[in-house]
Length: 289
Image 1 (cartoon, rainbow, N blue to C red):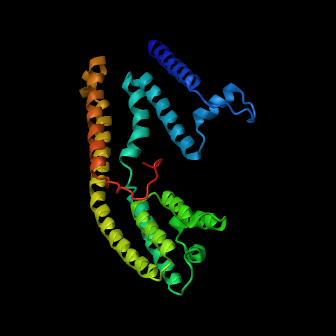
Image 2 (image 1 turned 90 degrees about the vertical axis):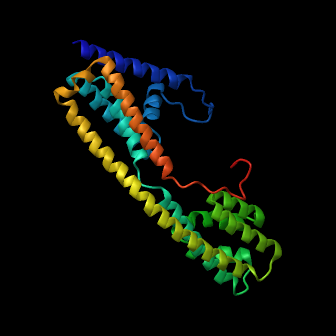
């Protein structure tokens, strides 16, 4: 019964520490909000406020439960720590690149700039051209363009609305496009259409280059996922054999934890190597910096 008693004590201690930390965090008092029962409020906070948070925490709780069961059955206390950490961290370290969404936004900016150029070419003002471009705005930036149109229709100053649009995009290429629109709004000339055509062509070239770089980086990420899967299967099979007896002791589990931490460090290093550096913005506000 000692493993069971130890498991119950550990779980109770972790729960007490979590509740203590939650209670020590200061939160602004909202006098107009309905009062909640402390227990329900605690459970709601632990579950998460968004579907993504709830799914992630449910996976971690399930992994922790499996780890406790594995500890009770096999005596491997390390499972209580390793399994939740693996469920939470490995999907982040081994996920596919987030560059695909950035590339799609860049391609959408190129298409929008091209459409805006064609509208400006018939002599329409920049505010009217932006408003009419909302109907054909690509999906990745449609919400950003809709906010820009809403600000213009709410009688915002054109420069302030365009700078807010750049902050919504939060991208260096979006800053170049916004800077061209700002110059066009100041000078009110007929050259903005040609400038937007050139920017659209430059962005398309950038998109092609980024797709090539992302394809090369994907090879390293695929290799890391395969090596991790093979290592996990091999380690699991080894732990079921007598060869793992030296690791059953406290010192052995500490050594195994250090080895696993070194492997995770290699995954972090590889992920940082395959991440494209973020280009600095030219229209960033003080808050964004």
